[in-house]
Each structure stands twice: as structure tokens, then as C-alpha cells.
Image 1 (cartoon, one colour):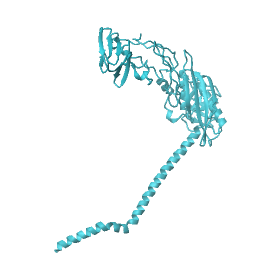
Image 2 (cartoon, rainbow, N blue to C red; image 1 turned 90 degrees about the horizontal axis):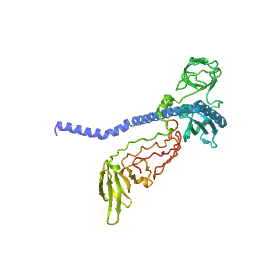
Image 3 (cartoon, helix red, strand yellow; image 1 turned 90 degrees about the vertical axis):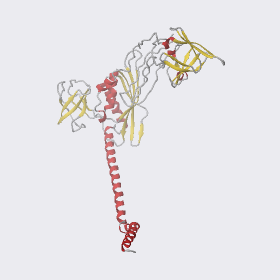
Image 4 (cartoon, rainbow, N blue to C red; image 1 turned 60 degrees about the horizontal axis):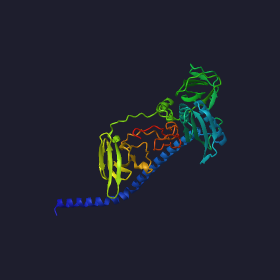
Length: 445
């Protein structure tokens, strides 16, 4: 074996030894270091997890502190009294009349907290009701509306409100005799003044930029100098007013997520008052509409002959159809799927419609309506040209922004039944009734 071959063989043997022996060598000399590295990585992961848990715990403790500040007092009777008084004040400042705030018989309990429920009834205009619900949602109290019902007048008059409000009371909350901090004006506050002296600042924030209610006017305290406050007055649509000495001033904390929602913006979105009875529907009927001129004049259905006859009164033309015949009259197209003695059935898309003897093609009725499938005979027509559907009951989550429909007169149309309203009730929405008035349909006989 030559010297070169020996060198190559030695290198190959050395490479094999290194390849297979490195794990053993590493285990002997570096194994303990790898174990320490793995332990260190595990400890770092544990530390990060504990830090994350600690942050979440601190955040939860902060939220719990905020919740307790926003909750009702811990003593049940005191919490009930103060909550009733606050809702009464809110209803009065919103302009509601016939206002009654009474305790509900059943009060709830949970782990370390209780629920305080009261019933609020009253009457008012749509604008007054909007104001009440807007302010109810804005105030930083730990409360909610569990159910609400608004009834519109049959003819004219105020809306009737029935609402169940529920507040939370923590067992370890701070006792207090006021739901919100209150004081009085030390001096009078004319309309043109933007600063005022109050009798006491106890219970109020020490830093400015908090909201207060001076009788019916809302303001923001922009600067504090002892017992003298500088104010930004008449905020959120409230009117500037002159306030006499000793007029009541109440802290009015606003939930951060609703601070930018203004009453004027809410009113703009609700400019169409849903409690106003809609006016008469005016529609123009095309006298030359082929579908309206074409009627089912006869239908023969026996074992041997299943034939129907469509007649166009304007063109004096007759069309004979059988099961499977495709029809196209004006913009009404479909396939005849059944021929019966008193009617035929026409499939249009995925829906099947029934056309009775003597009726025109615009009067086709969906089979779902006839079988109780939920369609409305007065809303669904073969070509979609029926009268526009009136608004259904609308029920929403927790406050203004979802309003129901007014009561209106009931009526009927020929052999078609009147449609009554549907009641619905839920937290943060409205329940009301509504039915269609007796407007006549073009083409009905």
C-alpha cells in the first residue's frame, strides 16, 4: 500500500470515528452543559408565563377596583334607595312624565355580588325617551337594561315606557350615602359665566376634565382652583341656564367607550321616528302591464287532460298551458309544475307560486305563505311589485340605537287577512305592535 493510500485510509477512519463518536464525546464532556441550557430555557419560559399572569392579575384587580367604584353600595336597601332616586332624577331631567320607579320583587345573587332590579314606567315624547336612554347608557354605573317595552299611541299622545333596570352591588364595596358625589353652588351661576364656586369638592376628582350635572345642564370641569371650577358649559345638547345659589351639582362620570357619542348624533340617526304612523303608499300602475292583463280563466285537471287557459284581455289572446309548459309574459317567467281544478302552480327560480282562477299573474301567491311557511300574502308578489313591506319589530342590545314600531290601525283588504303586529322584548331594545292599514292594492277586485 502506497503512502498516499495510507493517508487517505487514515483520514477516512478518522472521519468515521468522529462521525459516530462525537455524540459519545459530547455526552461525556458537554451533556451537563446542554442540560443546564435546557433548564435555563424552561425557567425563562416559566418566568415569562408568570409575568404575563401577574400582568393579567393586576389588570383584573384594576378592573375590579373600577367596577366597585361604578357599582351600587354594598347594603341592599341603601343601594335600592339610591338607584331608585338616580333613575327618578334622570327621568325627570329627561322630561318624562307619569314616572314611577319601583323595586322588583326578585333580586339576584352571585359570588360576592348582588343584583338590584327596579321597574321604571313613564310617558314622554320620542326625543325625551331618546335622551333618557342615551344618558342611561353613558353614565359610568355598573348597570344595564334587562328588558324594555315602548308602546306607541293608537291615535295621538305620548309613548309609554316600561323598563327593567338592573345594577350590581359588590359585597366588599365601599359604603356610601350617595350614588354619585354631590355638592351645591356657593354662588349663583349666570348664563354668561364659565367659572363657579362650589360648597365642597369632597368625593369629586382632584384632576380636571370630569363631567358634572348642574340641575339639567351638563358641563365639563376644565380647571380646578380650590373650590372654584372653570367650566365648559352646555355640553351634549343641554341648554345653558342660570343657576341659583345652592343649586345641586352632581358628579356625572361617563363611560370611556361612550364619551364620543353625542346626543345630537343619536338624534340624527333616529331622525325618522319609528313611532309615527306612516303615510299612505302611492304607487303608479302600468295599465299596459302584460302580466297584469293576463289572467287564469280556466283549469281542467283529470286523469287524461290537465290543461289551463291564460287570457290576455288587452290583446284578446289565449295561451294553453300544461304541466311542464314554460311561460313568459312581460317580465314574469316560470314553469308550470301543477295544474289543478281551481289553480295552477308556477315555479320561478327556487320558489313555487300559486295562481288561482280569475287572478292575474301579478297576484300569484308563494306556496310558503299558503302552507304557513312564514311569508306574508300582502308582501310577496310574483314580480316583486307588491306594496313595500313595512318595518318589522326591531329589538336591540342595551340602549338607544334599536327602536320598535308604533301601534297603528288594523285593517283588511277584501279576502286577504289584516296583518297584526308582532311583540318582542329584549334588553336594550323596544317592544311594540304594528299592523298594516287598509290601503287597497292595484289590481285587486
